[in-house]
Length: 224
Image (cartoon, rainbow, N blue to C red; front, side, top):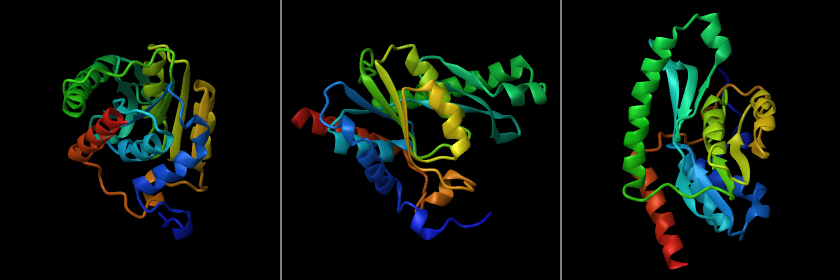
């Protein structure tokens, strides 16, 4: 795998978030806008977007359904609210039994609930009905996690769903665009390779960092 050209890379997730916020400036100052980051890596990006737009920040959880033994191979994903999106082509090609998918989904559902409690504590999930919701991640590869998030969010009847990411392959953007009201991707490099190579610093985001960013955003809303 080649290294990405330095001039095409983000310094870190905060840098990517600030650039992405510039592309979303038409949503600044509106009281109907909510920014939701996909933990963990999407939250530092979303925090910068929310700060720039003057919008509330929260999380929307998605868990990949990895094939046992080849966990990086996504059979699909689940999201907050119970939505499940499957990679139908992969499931059919590998003849993956439904019972196996259910078992993996049950395990990931347990982890999803754990993280909901960890990140949000006693706070209730944000009300999204009738709002413009901006879903943010640090990048897209196949887009399966984001599609699960979009499917789950649709059930809660927002007025508008905007997916915003710093980087993604052109093909993934083209597949996802019809499923949302607006898709904003700051950069679509070709060839793409992987999300991480487009960052100089792509260290793993920790649970503690997610909690800190959410606490700071909540404190900022309370003082404004």
